[in-house]
Image (tube, rainbow, N blue to C red; front, side, top):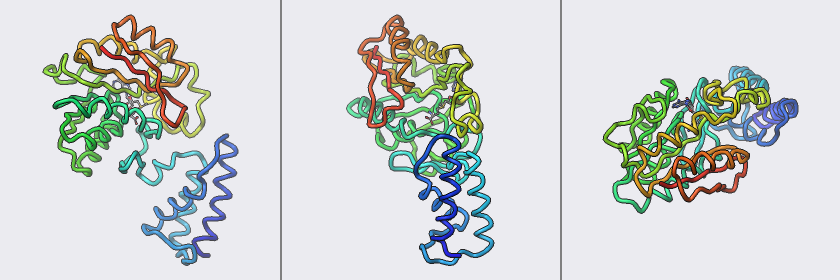
Length: 283
Ligand SMILES: C[S@@+](CC[C@H](N)C(=O)[O-])C[C@H]1O[C@@H](n2cnc3c(N)ncnc32)[C@H](O)[C@@H]1O
């Protein structure tokens, strides 16, 4: 069987699976990515697929058809103009966070020796984006998950980023004290799903991504945001920014939190993808 025929078959089973899970699109690209991963090379449409590769490919398609995220299966995820290594057990970066990174970069670019803290950094997409775009910036990525941090460090090293450090930290608690009051931009894409709403997430997320990357266990999902708003006041310099990526429905509640903590310029902004918002606040 040639590669093109195999892709057609795989696409049909991926479409059927996606229909079951309630989402669709991209199945043909996914099938090609799985075949390239199984083969270790990029085949042409007419290339005959060796039986061993075919078996491996079928196993990968079956994993995807059960709902496992593509990123876990192929071991990488593209973000902006770079590729990050990823493994199961960590949050899969979303394309929506590219807008969060853009908002941070825009505010840091014109500053002299700016400092950017990316809280709950995961495997580091936002921190890496900022460190790559702004060689004059000092960027720190902080997270509780050792597994995510070890991937983040690997990614920064692979991309040759000397201005980026990752540290294990519960929000700000592990950040260097010397940065108190001197941070230009804090970003966070927190786990913000309300504890009672976990069950309504699509299977791909609910069944595969670790719980602590999705929810902080609070009733309204804003436990971490509340802490960041309060603690941020001690870390962000006057005129500096707090940028929070959340679901659109959380704007009003977060606006109230930010206002009472003393932030100004509180806005809900979005890029071309409207699934999430970046809430801005300035000190
Ligand atoms: C929604 S994920 C975002 C990851 C990354 N920023 C991204 O966009 O791909 C949330 C992250 O928060 C981390 N996390 C959860 N509680 C935390 C805490 N108290 N302090 C620091 N990180 C935390 C999780 O380990 C997870 O990596």
